[in-house]
Length: 83
Image (cartoon, rainbow, N blue to C red; front, side, top):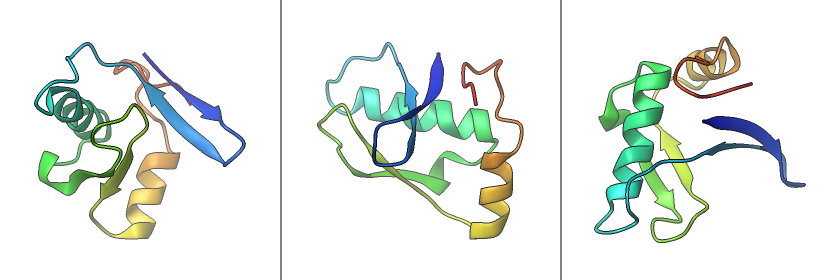
């Protein structure tokens, strides 16, 4: 399940994965989830900060305006993300 939260530093997407934070399994689960939810190839996403922590910064490769439209549009609730 995921939600958009305001942490005081702007909106953040909070998701929960069941993969263990061992050998990058949780990071891979986050990438798989986001790629599936946003219909992007996994290779277009990467963890650029927070690989060993709970809070992560994800890089999304592509045209900024097209990505913004996709991300701000109807975020799939079936995938557990709420906007």
